[in-house]
Image (cartoon, rainbow, N blue to C red; front, side, top):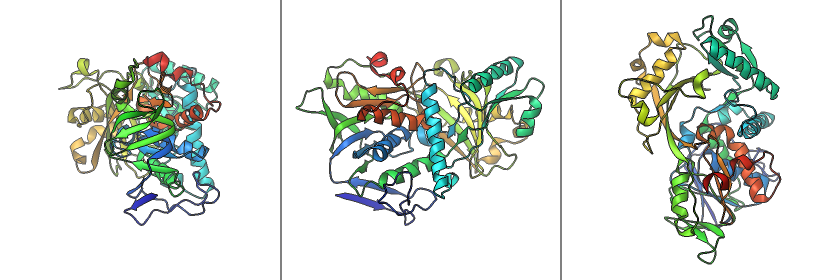
Length: 458
């Protein structure tokens, strides 16, 4: 039996949505996600996904639309309470390097997000309303002659890899973004096909689509239920058949997938204590701040923007910042969402699982942005005290800079998908496809060997 608890009258199911089976003919009304959860009295499913962030939810979605398997999603909190909800939402290739281990996965995900946005258009739905989607293009800004030389080489590499990419001189850059400070040494790499979305809207849309399968008995959510252990067949065997939570046992006959973001490392450690398996999943939290200025009208941004040093995230300095111990860095990123909010970032630091906002870092983000947008120099951040929000999230960091995706050696039917750091949203759809293909035994669209668990965690 499936129980559906609805606290808003605005939820309807999508007619011919990208999630729907041919028999489904009801329609979704665009708008923010209502407060709704789907639970089930049953405890047995084909797949159990541990983690309700963008990776876990899209993995569930892929099984639902790409197979006839049933799926349960279990999380110690609720969706968008971790890194997913604190992100900037860019689906960019500007800062990716062709030929790197993550390139093909990033490209595949980039294409799948664009396919989803186009499918909504084809259905007469607005991707901006449903996903917060904006095809803005992206700009990576260089402010020194050396940075511009590097950007020209980047444009060449991206073009050779099949992307539309263009180098902009300072004059061309100013035409595209009049708010940016330029001089003779300023230039930019421009990718017109890059986009951005709103994580909360995208997650709400994916959740709604997943819940369409609840009436068929194929989907359920178990939120506010921390996972406490693995269930193995016949007690101590190597076959994982599900998970224990504080409230119940959830059985996954075909697969159990851990996709718990920055908590994946510590969770796997706890889950494997009794399994006699030596494994260290080195995913750890990397804290980040974003500053959101609501209804910002001092200037308008036409594109998503980041500074050339974003990939390296150069160390910042400022009063009260212990850079060496925390490995703190701040680089400028700037976007404007579909509601006119200015979103500025971003910081990275290692401070464990602390999620308290740091005002010193917020001011450093503002001051860094003012180096690129001179109008901000004439505005005090305190002027926006009532119109600002701070997003703090914990990115799931992997030391080698790429996620870990694959089966867990020594245990049957247990898989791991984590460690995307700041790229979880952008790489989610490709990751979900990869995991689903592994479980179903299908040929992978992307070579998964670079992301394996055995070579990097055992």
